[in-house]
Amino acid sequence: MQRNVDELVWRPATELAALIRSKQISPVELTEAVLARIDALNPRLNAFCLVAHDLARRGAREAEIAVTKGEPLGALHGVPLSIKDVIFTRGLRTTGGSRLFAEAVPDDDAVAVGRLRAAGGVVLGKTTTSEFGHKALTESPLFGVTRNPWNLELTPGGSSGGGAVAVASGFGPVALGTDAGGSVRIPASFCGVYGFKPSRGRVPDTHGFPGYEHVNCPGPLTRSVRDAALVLDVIAGGDDRDRFSLPRESGHYVEACDEGIKGLHVAWAPDLGFATVDPGVQAICENAAAEFEGLGCRVEVVNPGWENPEDTFSTLIAAQFYAHWSDQLPEAEKHLDPTLVRFIGRGAGVSAREYILAQERVKAYWAEIHAFLARFDLLLTPTVAVPPFPSGQAPPREIAGQRVSVLGWMPFTYLFNLTGQPAASVPAGVTDDRRPVGLQIVGRRHADRTVLAASAAYEAACPWGDRRPPL
Image (cartoon, rainbow, N blue to C red; front, side, top):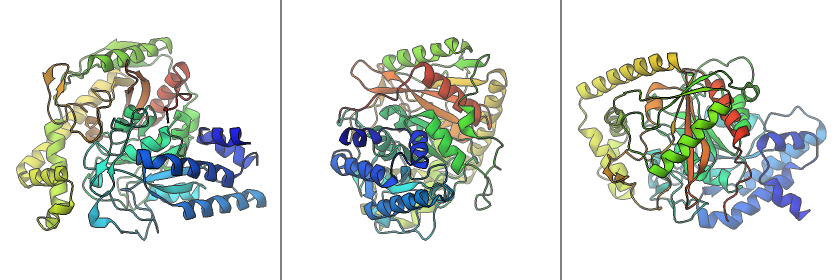
């Protein structure tokens, strides 16, 4: 029995849900196995900032009763999952990783959380993040530093790093994160798991901390592509509380994973024309991109010639953070992450003219990318320009012997938050010293199904599901 319990924590959500529906496993047994693993390992990893033992056990018992009574069951019935600590959860503390909200308990769920609960998901607790998700690392004054399960000396990336660590470590098969500049895809790359950023509006973005208007997307972190598709089937669809949300598409995203990608025209852009990439990362991603030829695609190496979007992105987001949080300063400065204080300070210097010109530049990026993806079905890039680096340290400012900008280590992700295309990170391999590397797959506007199909085809050709960190 112990062998089966130990193995339960690594089963995919799709399989667990089926086993629960057929009464082959108990939601209570499953939840207890996951909680035991969290209790044993989370002190070393800091993936969870709140483990809701009582809530999870109550949810598991209710799920088991529903199965016993033959009641209608949701797609994630009895499946344990976690929620990033910037996403509001009714009755469950949500701090944003900030001392300012250390005891805050929301009255309402975010739409995505409500849908996960309605589908039978068992909420385990809240996963760690940087303060208000303001940077792509997972460390905060309130909860400290989160560790990468593949090497405890390394960062898991962020800001959904706690969720990526949880999924990679067997703390439940599903974590709900948010991605405003790469915050799902970057930790997916660093932790060797799958991360999916839906098209903007595909999942309603409600009930969270402000600061990332028009770029933020709730999205899943999982160990398999089909698990992410299953989660998207649950959380996607319009809701009037988010006026930019998209109506529900016909069909199921899980079905898209079987559609195949034979005949697609795929662009491989190793540096997008402006990035400096670690040679080891580039070699791994180049090999991963070449796999798409074997999947029936026509792969073309390209340089899109786009302008580096870093200044545009930083201008918009810094101004938004200043607008929302500057009234907390200077009184709260001593309680905040120093990098957040500096970021808010940068926003103070953004004029209305600069803000509007940055918005106009986003329109130009959209036109350029739309024209580019009229030629190609998919765009492939590295997810991150470097492999995971030491925790508690600033990101590298030098790559391959060249000085890079502040966001030069993560140049590939935030452009597609500005323009709203769906994008995913798939595990592409590991460096010589066993650090995970991800490949980013970007689709056309609203082509979430194509990105999932490409991800699933790559997963079938280069499976990663049996890789487990040395914990």
